[in-house]
Amino acid sequence: MGRLLFALLVGVIVNGLIVFGVESVSTLLHPLPQGFDANNVGQMRAYLASGGVPVTSMVMVVVGYLLGALGGAFAASKLAPHRGLMPALVIGQISLVFIIINLISLPHPMWMMIASVLVPIPGAWAGGRAARARGGMK
Image (cartoon, rainbow, N blue to C red; front, side, top):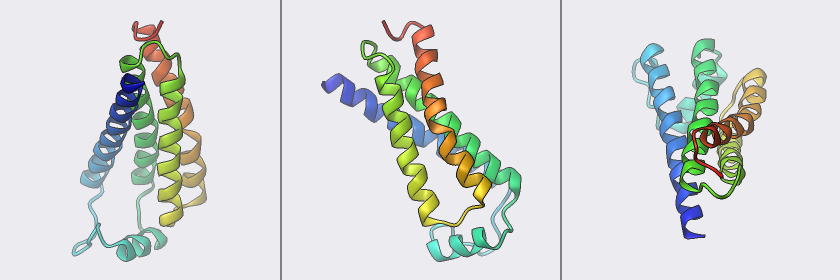
């Protein structure tokens, strides 16, 4: 049980680091406006609601969710090899919860909301399957 919890913790951390990395690259490619404080939730809400966010930036966030779920699930599945796809799918569900919290907290276009909730479970499933194909699961 301890190994499973460790695997899930590592999976969540890997997921978060990948999402953070993709969003950081997006911010480098599409810098925020001068004087913008990304830690100010009010400013962030206003910026997202204004429609000034480039579509490619939003697509990169969705891709980050997909890659984060895939990578986190892969890591969890490799660390908990005798649990089948369960660790991978748990990572997908945890990722989905964090995505929904983000979508509730900040305004997003409808297409992005739909895409965001559709990607973590298939991404996690693919990560678990990839771990299995690479000898991670029995």
